[in-house]
Image (cartoon, rainbow, N blue to C red; front, side, top):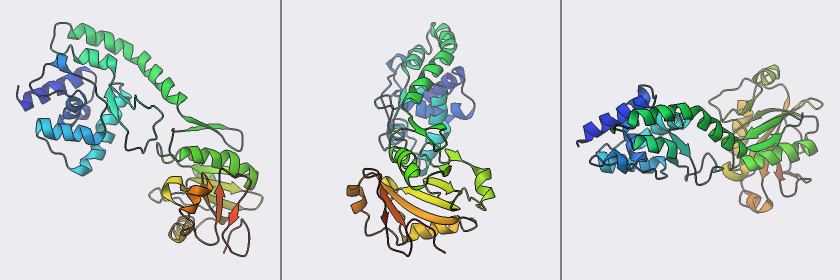
Length: 314
């Protein structure tokens, strides 16, 4: 079978599975064929479901179908095909480690066993009935997978007692400690106005409250990982989870000061680390007139010089 014929078949299959025009185009068809490890001359019964990352998918498309996508296409495949395949439950993400951090280089995708059973019937007399049975089953399967994903999220209790969750792994473990350990000790009575998350950058964003404090947020600017407001002192405390992105160094301090230049409260800058071992890697970078906190010693705060301890500077 020619490459174009096999690609056309994959497009028709995606349409039958309920995908829209973009999720049935050549890019999406080739992505499906890569996920199935299906070569042009293979039978549909040969379809498999290995776990593949985006780079491995692109390599298979290049090697088996002669379509060499540019490196910058990787994000398009991920955002405009794989995300929607996952939403439709055609594929699952990280079946080997469901709590894998969103920004992990080991992130992978796998065609679900239920979808694979349908795909292996494509072109056979049993396909229409198998497909119909599968489509009836999908809503229940989506609920099961959604519940499983929710179980892997990190629960957080905000200072006001409100429950909240973050995506699993990465620096979000440290962000949980910042909210639940740092804030009650060093910013008592503070309102959490922003929390970042690799899964959804603006995970918690109290836009109206920030606007009332004079903050005009540029959504292209790099926000700190956590923003808390202390109404009794009129301070905005800007906290970075330094476990993966580094601390508030002189450059970052200047960036944050620029990002919050219209704020009426005073600005306080805090670098947060999981432990002192991690902090030691960055000691030479931490900016003066900032604070440093380690989750392993939650009752202590390290002040980097300046005329006052835990307070804003003009």
